[in-house]
Image (cartoon, rainbow, N blue to C red; front, side, top):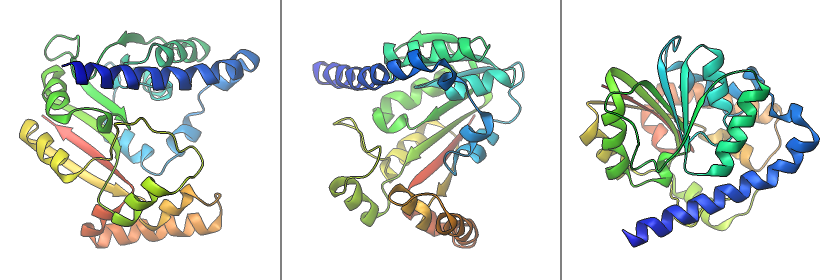
Amino acid sequence: MPAAMDRLETERQFHDRQADRRQETYRQSPDALLVNPEAYLDHETWIRPAIAQLGDVTGREVLDFGCGHGMAAVLLARHRARVTALDLSPGYLAEARRRAEVNGVKIALVQADGERLPFADRSFDRIWGNAILHHLDIPLAGPELRRVLRPGGVAVFCEPWAGNPVLNFARRRLSYASKERTAGEEPLRRRDLADLRKTFPRVEVRGFQLLSMIRRVIPPGRLVRLLDQWDERMLRRLPFAQGFCRYMVLTLRL
């Protein structure tokens, strides 16, 4: 337990620092808190198709699990979901609160550890998470997610994937823009999928960014667009290649 608490405290401090660095920007330019739905959905190739996996969220209880900046929470609230945004970081929750206020939506905010959820059984119809599971102990977090999800519910997670040895080398050795990680986080692996499959009766996976992962080191442009198109065709024809992608979208169903 002490080691787990140290890990959680390290995570909290890391993300509080990230949120603190953005506060001056928001003080000077409150409009930076506005959420452009199209820009958010298209800022990574997996976001739009992943959100679509949630289906119609109108009137549904939705948990934004590891809400971070709060952009997904705002988007879901605009689609008339009843959103609860959870995060370990008070700094992130403060940012999510301000973002909700500026965008004119209501969300409930909860500070908690994702491995010990403070909700009653069967509290949510949908759960959304972006780059959160790989920070957690899956054998602890998975059963908690199932516990709070209602029968027929869906949980969707977008997660970095560890199936490509070349990409793993680059993650360890190369520096590139926006490369910031906590000491303990690791991309998801096959053993993590195996743990989720012990908990959820249906686990669907879809890979994103095979060759187009080069966007991490080159600016947007024609080459990236062409590689996106190539990836879409190739991954549809050769499903095994998804195991070498940069990110996976996991859809967990009850």
